[in-house]
Amino acid sequence: MAKTKWKRPRKVSIGALTYRIRYTTPGKGTELQKGDSGCISQERQLIEIDKNASDQLCVLVLVHEILHGIGDAMCPNRSPFAKELFTCTVAEMLTQALLSINLLPSGLNDLFQGHRGKRKGKN
Ligand SMILES: [Zn+2]
Image 1 (cartoon, rainbow, N blue to C red):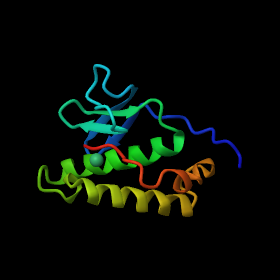
Image 2 (image 1 turned 120 degrees about the vertical axis):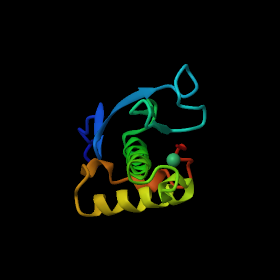
Image 3 (image 1 turned 90 degrees about the vertical axis):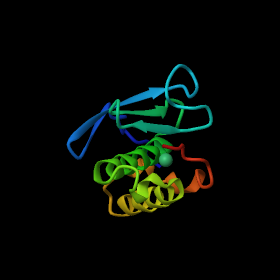
């Protein structure tokens, strides 16, 4: 399988907001808790992702946190994306769908062969 040249993004637009994306070590002076792969803060317009995550996991976590961000933009606190299990499921299925229509780099195709069941980080 060809290795992806995917470059990890530094910011993402969600609705009217632009979030910075930081790649950090969980539990080391950041909002990202040990055991989580990603988190999002609407107040700080910041997404943090475990810097040791593979590209594949990184994409999935990004989609997951973006969904939380969309939920916050639509209806804070009452969005279905405030629910962790719902967000996990939609993120996995959406990422898989985007891969299947080549909207994500093909090097990420093994996304769903190695990471199933792994915790995807929360809020
Ligand atoms: Zn989450």
